[in-house]
Amino acid sequence: MAKPTNRTRKTPLEENIKHIKSKLSSCKNPPAEIVELVEALSRTATVDSAKDVVTYASCSFPGPRRFSSLAYNNKNLYFYGGEHDDGKNAKAFSDTIIANLNQLDSCKKLSSKVFPLLRSGHAMASFEGGFFIHGGEFLFDDINFCYNDLWFFDYAKKRWFEIELTGNVPAARSGHRMTYHQGIIFISCGYSMLPNGVISIYHNDLYAIKPTTGECRQVNVQMKSRIFTPRSGCLLTSWNDKIIVLGGYSLLDLSENNLQGSLSNEMWQSDISHIMRLFSEHSNQVIPEELECIRWEKIPKTFFYRCASASTVNKGLLYMFGGVIDDDRGESESESESSDTSDESDSDDVELCSSED
Image (spheres, rainbow, N blue to C red):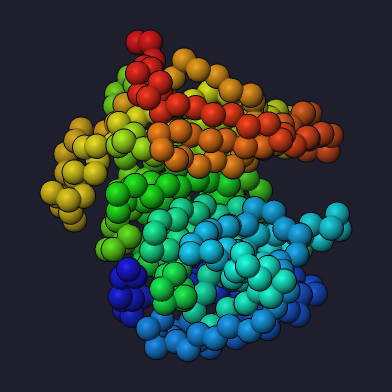
C-alpha cells in the first residue's frame, strides 16, 4: 500500500521530528518524555517499514481521551491517538492499541520503530484492508502544530506504513474529515495553524488522493457554483459516487477580540464519478482545470446544529449520532453541551434532492 520512500529528501516523519525539535528548543522546561520520544524517533526515522520488527505487549484498556481514531475488523477494535485534558495540561497520544471484543480486559499495545507521531483531531477512513489517518494536531502542554502526513495501518500485517504524498498536497490541518471511496481518499475542511499555534484559517476545499501512489489532486469548484462555508468537525461520507458534507463548526471572525462561532445544520452533496475516472484514465497527467471541477448542491433538508458527530453509512442509510453544540461567546466565555440524539438519512432521498439555482 505504501509508496517506497524517496531518500533524496526528508520524509514527512523526519520533517515533523525536525519541527518538534525546533519547538522544544524554544521551551524553558521542555517535557522530558517528549524529548526522549523525539530523540528515539530521530534515530529510527529512516527505518524501512518492511524491515521493522513489530511486537505487541499486553496493556490495559485505553484511558479517557477525545479526538482519537477507532476502527473495527474481525472482532478487533483498533484505537489510535487522541488527547486528554485534565483542565491544567493537555496531552496527545501516539499509542496503537488492539482490543478483542471477547477479551476487552486484555488489550495489546504496538511496539514499533515506525509509527505516526502523537496527535489528536486527525482524520481517519477505513476499508476492509486497514485504515488511514491524515494530519491532526501535535499537542503537549503549550506546544502544538498541525501535520499534513498520511499513514496506513495494515490489518493483516498489523503495522504502520507512511505514504509519501506527491502533487498538490493538502495544507497541514486538524479537525478535518476524510472518506475512502473505491480506492480513492477524499479529504475536506478542517483548520490550519500559525507557527504560534493560533488557528489561522478554516477550509472548505476538497482533495483526492490515490493511496497506492500517493498522488494528490485538489478538486476545484465550478465557476459560479455554490459551496458551503469553511468549517471543521463536520461529517464527510460517500456513497453511489456522491460525496456528502454535513454540519460542522467555524469562527466567523478570527480577530483576537471578536471570536464569533458558527454551527451548521446544512447538508451538501457533489457527484465525484468523473473525479474517479480521472485517476484511472489520466493518472499523473496534467489535466485541464475544467475537467477536475465539481458542483456542490445544497440539499433542502436540515438537521440539528452540531459538530463532531459520529456517522456511518450502511445499506443506503446514513446514520449520525451525538456531537457538540456550542454557545460560543468568545474564547474566555463559552459553554458547550453534548448531544445524544440520533438522525437517520435515506440516501435515496438525498440523491433526488438538489439545490436551487
